[in-house]
Image (tube, rainbow, N blue to C red):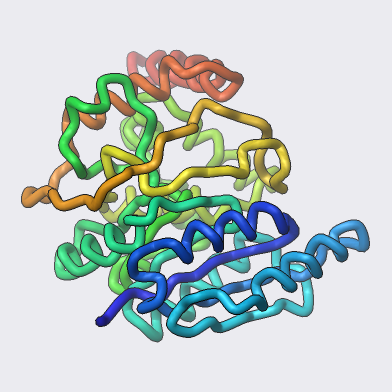
Length: 303
């Protein structure tokens, strides 16, 4: 059986890494899949013990077809680690499934990723398969899978023909964005994606994910999403390097195989509106910043 290789990026959270691997191992296709684990080196002395504990965990006899370990000698940081790992593996295998050490998966996640990769491998506009599905209002009204514009980092898959469009240069990607493109990129101002671009340019963040989304957006790409999420982010407990405690994005994992996929390669209007509503009405500081940004962009467009 031919399956896409899986990459798992880990750092200094042994408990999360253990949960991620235990869930992944329970997937139906785990024993048929090669697993590449990239372990970043400690950033400082305080991270050394946790990194060593993580490396003990990933060296266990996990039930995958084959496991390849890359143990970094120096600290790369998440962005450089992801870009390097994905670029190497997808070039060799033509496709890849990507996870981080704070994600648990439904037992049907690998089946979903592999089925979708096979189904859309010749559709150039489909640039990513997202494993995460938003906890939306009236979720049951949406189809089992649908297309949406935003690239998601919480468990995803792609092909070499799509990843070749990844551009790490944020200025080449976004300096020519028009006001309308910024507005659409940010889901009509309801999410802070453009703020992330500005923070990256200012050196405040170092995100591979916002550059990947900008690459997808700039090439008119689409991302396949599941109605019922195949991944759960367990890192929003405040333990991560780039995350604070947050429960807004908690989901119930899919409990059955996904069998329906869209034939038309176009963004699903109802799903877009539902996700836009979610962005606008969720609680927390991100939502408040999004509203301020939306008002600012609307005023700019009216000028």
